[in-house]
Image (tube, one colour):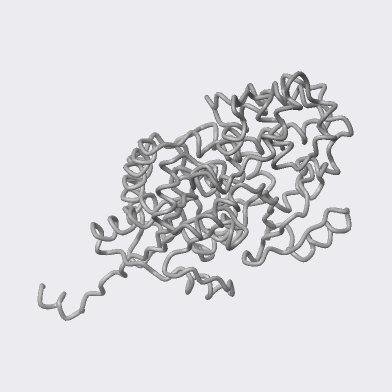
Length: 435
């Protein structure tokens, strides 16, 4: 099952060196792999594609590959991935094998995953297997973890300030880039392959941004109106902020808050391409920054895409399941509750607050929202499906938006739409009596 875009002769030794440099996971895998590519500029595009697929393929399937190899080394893990997951035969692999590896191959291929504990079958740590089993049940969790082990497609978002989706689809397909409209987002496009887009003329002209369809749908839950005052409370590099600005048609005022200067710096070139004039990026020290307090009670719409475990994005970031643990999740839930409470202070009477994560765990999602509503009686939960339906998006996952790659083809997302009670209008007669 050799990949058509892979080199004829696989750079296996180089891929093993890359895997060895990533596997300590003392930083995000994509950061470590990017560093490896910078240090090895002689590698061609096909070699880099193969190395990236091997490294991320091993990370996606690390637990089962570990078990399939009696004494796993980065080299043996790479061979096991090629044999078990990538589907290469012993004959295809023979030129790359050395010493006793040819004798090990039948055992690696014959390893029966179905006989292993669920955590090994699902390629997740024991603690995560327990949470997934308790949340989804065995059948759904099996389907979900299988989807999380597959590589994610490349989704882009049409920038409606610059062009229309149909026009962009025509442009892409005319250029030989196979593209189709996403099923839910009215501005989303899914690409069949993963072409390099950063030097592509429509990208440089600001006609689109790379953004998962699930992430796009969060903007439609916020549903800002033209002329609104809107805050993206944890803006990061600004993918969702730019969508909010486009939905506002570049009117009103849009603030992008974040505690990371590095992330906000990445927003600057994107903002320049976007054509938006209503967006103000703002570096804050924490959720309690004075700049936030000055806007208390003045904001129509607030999006809180909270820092989270990221376990809904394992298709793209498979190392997260190895880098998170129960303690790190517990620490995140404290931060999530604090950020949501601080963001709620911005919302004016009758305004809207959307809480979102890319996690699959109830303690980061429903539990945070339930505790917030118990402590903030001025807010009530609004049905997410009704909010989307009002914008001609037919997607009903219940009161909350719950997305996952098995059912929706998106990353795993959770979102709750919280609305503040409108201001109570005083009876003019009361004022007269008071006088």
